[in-house]
Length: 219
Image 1 (tube, rainbow, N blue to C red):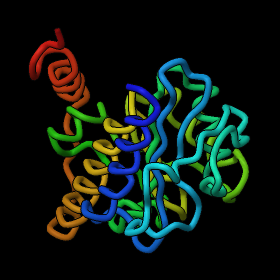
Image 2: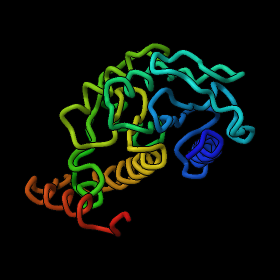
Image 3: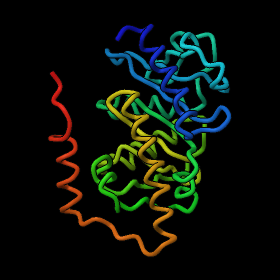
């Protein structure tokens, strides 16, 4: 994908956070690496989603410094840069303050793996990362540390919101959508009675089936 198409696609994915109900106001962001990993594009800071344009995506290096762009990048740029530096398989990152997932983060509780869709997508619980201030790479450090021993592509940063990773921006947005969906379902379940987690052997089976057997093979 050339840079023009990457910016256009990334802009659309950022805007999709609104239609998916994952953000309010100007909060949240999606970023994506260049194919050669010489930098990444990220949403500009504080621009309303209704006014967002592909040309406004800001190109930054893996130290979080602006390479190209007229606007200031997201306040989470340093966190994204740290994740890209330390997780070389990650090509896209999404951050949201989605309501139900953020509620779990506010009480410091991981979302237990009690749905087959969770086992498929996340391979276990969605863990909670440490509290970290915004504006430097502390959030990125917390994301990397929390996910390094987890199959989950999502992490609930304590008292904050959701960060998700993927091989590209689209897959990280998918993870954010799924994270909010299971966060809501399991909150509802918790009102009905104790949540019953899936056995680990079944989680392992479902995760392998979904990632290695389900769907169509790429050609």
